[in-house]
Length: 501
Image (cartoon, rainbow, N blue to C red):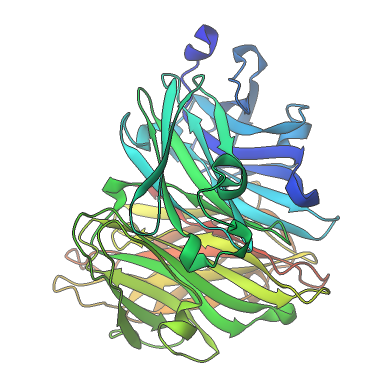
């Protein structure tokens, strides 16, 4: 333990694997490192096994050139030669640590084409919540199981986990003694980790089962998450747990859907709301559909949250807004008063050969209006592929507003980069006020062919107005299956912001 404390890593990807899991799942991880700087970065990677810690003598040193997206396929096996699950810590030893972006795709592999994956974002310790600060995420049962995991920094030796039911009542609490630089996961919260928390969890509905779980490092920093996993497909959606300070008055949730998609997919969206308040809250939820000027929303509803309540709105466009298909766009949540957290899962739903309803989905984190491409920040998206076995779609949500708060138009430049950072194509998209733009199979639309481990560089076109706020939120959804039939499971790659001045 003393040796590991000497390694002060830059950040962590909490949740990597090369292991067989529950329900005949077969988990693997591809790791992506993107250098958004103008100079080469040298980085050392360390593997932290479940319940263990990093071995300082087993680091793997790599260099990443400017603009490059370095893909390490099945990284736990190929780079470290290990069978198991854990976390990967990285330490930037030369270059700008703020411009080395790290993320992973941890997936259940069915065969050479079909997989069910989840995006696992890397988090720098400099941005993580301070010791004692709590992180919250949703957990549900029924046709799903939920895992809760966390990674610790070089100081943390004790972590507290608390579970609150849908009424906000504390039901379980556990103090866990851990090693620094470890990875720890509580599997199947309702079935294994805390049996009896819900009576007959497999028969519970989402509304009955939803809980808020809270994680806090007592003497160090932690990065925590919950994963909601379909029991039949073993598809997982990874929700990065968020601090109370992440609660802001207004957030956007792009890629809400109620429509039929490519290859027989049927897209739906569930929204999870977690109140951290001792007072009742009434957040407004506005719907901004694709293909129109959204100076005003198309529909509006109000959620009623009791103090501390955890709530879920299933198939929100259908059940809360009473909208029929086809619908796709963004939700804008306001009047959160800094005391509520919002998460969304957008998924395809189908009936399997046994007549069971099964899902494959992606987790969507909220985006505050100000955390978008614009001003002093450009955006980078990296690690997506498009070809016979994968299709990639580009999503742009204009959140730019004037000094009065009215949504205004924006222009955004999108550069497509190869894996080695070469510029392949550029397009400028003119976005109307509040517009949600989705460009399906955008790689083909840009006149390109197959891309593996590609990247995007996004920048707001200057209009000379300095009083506007917000910008453009951006993401790529990488969907399994294209020419070759896949699972229709999607992985959402959210834009990372890089300061340019």
